[in-house]
Amino acid sequence: MAGLERLGETFRRAVHAVSTAADARRLAWLNEADSHIGTTLDLQRTAKELADFIVPSLADGAAVDLLESVLLGGGAARPTSARVPLTRAMAVSAIDRLAHLEPDPVGELSTFHPTPKLAHQCLLSGRPILVRRITPAVYETIAPTARAAALLREAGVHSYMVVPLISRGVLLGLADFIRCAGRPPFTPAYMALAAQLASKAAVLVDNARLYGRERETVVTLQRALLPKAAPPTLGLEVASSYRPSANPSGVGGDWFDVVPLPGGRTALVVGDVMAHGLEAAATMGRLRTVARTLLSLDISPERVLARLDLAARDLEEDQVATCLCVLYDPALGTYRVASAGHLPPLLIDAAGNAEFMDLAVGAPLGTGVIPYDPVTVEAPEGSRIMMCTDGLIKNRTGDAGTWLERLRAAASGPQPPFADAFDMIWERTGGGEGDTAGAASGGTDGNGNGGASGFGGGFRSGSGSSGNGAGDGRGGDGRFDDAIMLAAAPRSLSEAVIREWSLPADGTAARTARRLVRTQLDDWELSDLTEVMELVVSELVGNALRYGGGPGSLRLLRHGRLCVEVSDSGPDLPQIQHAMLSSEGGRGLQLINTMCRRWGSCRTPTGKVVWAEQDLPATGPSPSGGR
Image (cartoon, rainbow, N blue to C red; front, top):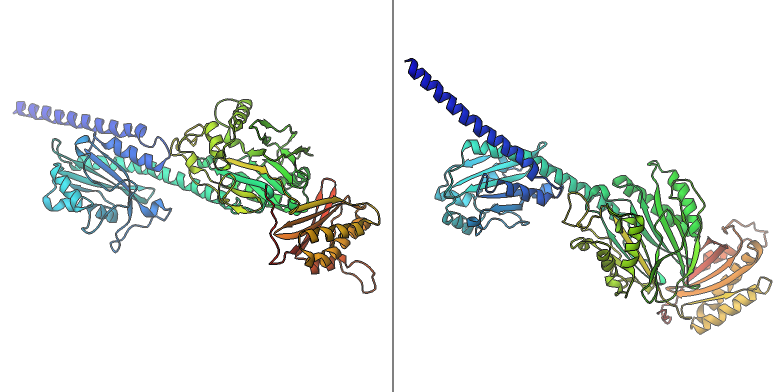
């Protein structure tokens, strides 16, 4: 009797030892999953890592499907039996002998019709389902189609289980597994093990989902705050490209703007908030709005940056930003440039020689260190100017000097067509394949027309991101920040578009201005507008003589509308005021406001300009403002 007891005790110890060893192996396997699943924060890659880890250690085939509502950012509502939930196949893995099976293709919506599927039941109940031995009638409740069910039978698949993916109370999807001939069927112990793995993996999948959703939110806001349509840019061909970082912590804060100004001038602005995320994107939107408002009142880049610095200091976020402001004047053929801590622009001549502009770089906006020193350079036809944010060249290796030299070298050499210029620079500065898929560009054609021309078509922001390195946010090439490129190429304008004259600073100025306007309108076959424009230019010149220290120049512009502009050295902008009935003056601007389509004024580096516009006759000839 004692011998039987000892034998029983030995047997129990042996069983316990085997069970303990099996538990240890299962625990080690689950621990090993931590180093194989969730190596990145890319959702599809995480799902693929889960499927690959399961095959062949636990199953001969595995598939991971996620609810379409979850992928689209919807809530966590449990599916109901009244409606079959839509899921999307995210990953499939199988041993070689099962490679011919036909699961739902990765990326496609899963097929749950017409036969009710076990996967559907798993989603409805939120519980795993085990089929130890698959009977002939059960194959069609497992496979997506009748043909796929037949292939399962022919391949000898004999055991099946499906487990839900639930994280933080949110049902994300499911993972199902199969075994074929040569391996024992699944048991409740295997199902419990699979459920444990699914619970761990679901957290990683959910992290990747939330990570991607955060990035998409920031990118959507970022795009919404960037220009969406190409404004008219007379005499300047403009194009842009925006490439968001794959890492949500690197998205947000970069911006650009193209602002049409009086007299055919154009302001080009590129900025970068020194932060990322939603707050940086919101700050960027505020600064862009302030900059546009300031440019409508003052076209001096240095003064715009100084006032923008004051505005940045008032922001609650206490953030700073860099900014580069370029003013192009088609009549003078020059750029006037000022920088607040931003990368200097690249000037590329007609021969393809690229050099950074020799520019005094001021302190970033929001630091309170002003003023900013401008520089004026020639803008010859055939040349290009390129502005960018540091995300284009910055990486985790090298220094600023190396980055700038790499950018200069990338922009040098024979210049490709505008449509290919951004892709060329992106690739030469280290952009990997796949990163370029996220590019978008657009611009105007130099005659002030938006649309497909320049470096690309349509002024729109890009969306894509690299599939490589999505987990560390560096793309495939080491970049970890947003990148914006803004380029422009000046185009000469004929006298059929713009004319400018110097006016005498004495009492003959008004008579001279009327004669010049009358003669030019006759040449442009716009004599019907002569009477009104003579009256308007007389009032503008009279105001310049009385309040502005004498007129400086007269500019007549014909593009879309007829615009007349008079400059002077006075600093005060004119305003319409109420005139007393007995007053002899004070009604000039009221007259201009009544007779013209619109009018306005803004400060310049040497004073101010006052301008007024008239609609062109519908049958009027079209000017050739080409190259």
